[in-house]
Each structure stands twice: as structure tokens, then as C-alpha cells.
Image (tube, rainbow, N blue to C red; front, side, top):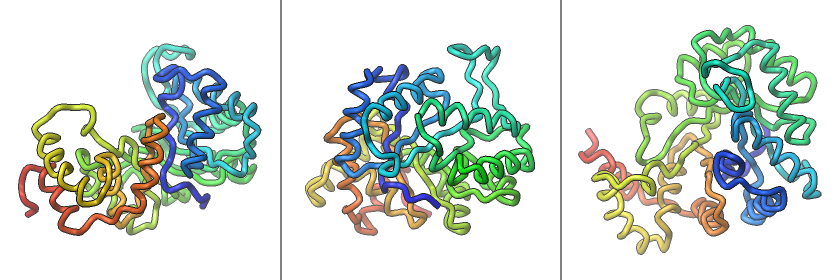
Length: 288
């Protein structure tokens, strides 16, 4: 398995779906991430209506950064409706031919000869494990991908594939305010099978929504920020980092300070009762 940084930079908002960085700004953002100790960059073919990987690749090629210094993740499978592709409706395509074609396009766009990790972006009701395994075999044998994984897969969906081709990662939504993965068997399975969890939206809804739940959480964090000499975002990351499955957060921020904060969160060890205090305040009731 490839070695990923303990915090991953999510690139969804770097292009047309967010900051709309120029080439020079994207080079600067890559370097800002590297300076913070973040060497892994998370992409998907659909980001920016299928344009962000190309923009990142152009910046990476001009940056002069050695390929071996970074790890590149991409995802495929979602057929986005509208934009740069003639899709009449949003759907999924996991045929052998499409998976191989999509990876080859990502490689061209990202200006690289290989992906450290390929993920299937979301499960499809029509996916066939043998078809997917055949594509993965071709891509691994040709050196175009080093590892294979999934994103947003349930335990049964992951097992369906893992019986045919090794799954090394499941990238899931996991945070204090969205912790269903702890209760629906997802993280149990990953821990059991020693499959690496990556967490998208690791800060959850805390900074996005003014809810009674988040008000309760904030009251506790006001105390904990003083106790741990840490920021709210660091403590929210420390909460998911304490899970024994070894979750790696994928952070979407482009703020230099928040990237630095995210890396510093790796050094915070929440006390056991403090971890449960945050869980209780999120749930609004004691644990059973």
C-alpha cells in the first residue's frame, strides 16, 4: 500500500467548484500544503465539471515538484449531468472499458504516469465485481495505479468487491456530527479487514450550520480549547483521529492556518471521557 500523509488535501474546491485558482495560485497552494507536511492530494474526475484535475496537472507540471514527493488520489464512476460531458442524467459507469479510460484521462490531466490510489466514487446498483476486478488488474499490472479502493461504500458493497480484488481504502463521510459509520458496521469492517478509512468532510456541520446540536458542542469546545490549548477545528479532527481504525481526514480548506492546524491536531490525544463528552453532546443523550 502507498504511504499517505496523515492529513490529506482535498482538491474539490480548488477549481471551478470553489476558489477558481489560477495556475500560479494552484502552485502556491500545492507548496503551502507541502510546507504544512501534507503530501497527499485528493481528486475526482468530476471536480469542477471534469476540469480541476487538468488545472491541477498544469500547475503541478510547472511547479517543478518531483512526483515522488507527493501522492495523488483520484476517483471515477460518476457520470455528471451537464457541463463538459453529454450526459442526459446523472448515473454511474463501472464497465472495465470506462474505468480504464477514466484513469488514463486522469493520468493525462494530472501530468503523471500513475495514481497512488484509485477510488470508485460511489457504489452503483449495476456494478459487477468481476468487471471491476478485471479493470483493476489491467491498471495495476501496467503500473497506472498502485492501490485500489472505494468511496461511500457500505460493508456489503465493499465485501462484494473485496472478494474479487483487494480493497485498500474506503473514503467515507465521518465526523463528530456525522458519525453513523461507527454504528452501521462501516468502521467495524475496516478495522477488522485492516482497510484504511479516509474521512471526507471531517469537520462535519459544525462551522456550517447554527443548530441546537452544534450549540451544545460549541459549549464543550469552549472549555476544551483552553484545556488542550487547541482550536475548535483541531479538536474536531482529534475526535475522529482517536478512532482505532486509523482514520485519515481529507480536509477541504485552502487556508494556510487551517492546514497547519489540521497537522497539529495529530499531536492531540483527547482524554477518554472528553471524547465521550463530545459524543454525548452531539447525540443529545447519554450512551446506552
